[in-house]
Length: 109
Ligand code: SF4
Ligand code: SF4
Image 1 (cartoon, protein in one colour):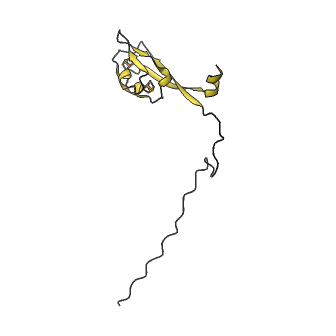
Image 2 (cartoon, protein in one colour; image 1 turned 120 degrees about the vertical axis):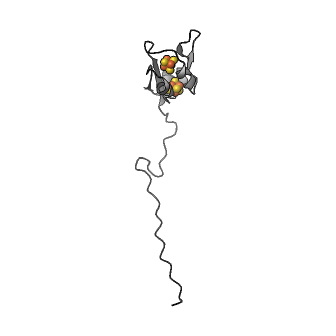
Image 3 (spheres, protein in one colour; image 1 turned 90 degrees about the vertical axis):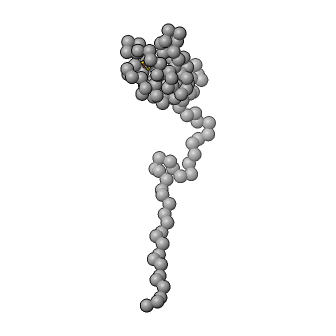
């Protein structure tokens, strides 16, 4: 038998459905302000051994060591909540949590 084999048919191509939370064709209304996330940073002085790791690992420069070698929260407004300071503190002396504030509420102040 020398005849060529017939190729099997290709499976039908189907595109995935968009997630239900993003309705197709709908955009966010223009001019609607997104909530602005801010973060609250706490340093528990009683647990801190002043090693400086929190300040060294903060990618946003929110924390600095003062002239006595203690960590200070100098630019909290720059905090992105990444949690690196918390993660690298060997004494669990840093806590970062989100404080929910609307950008419009801040503008009203
Ligand atoms: S959470 Fe991230 S950005 Fe905020 S102070 Fe800690 S290391 Fe810096
Ligand atoms: S990493 Fe922790 S122990 Fe070290 S200076 Fe920062 S708060 Fe203090």
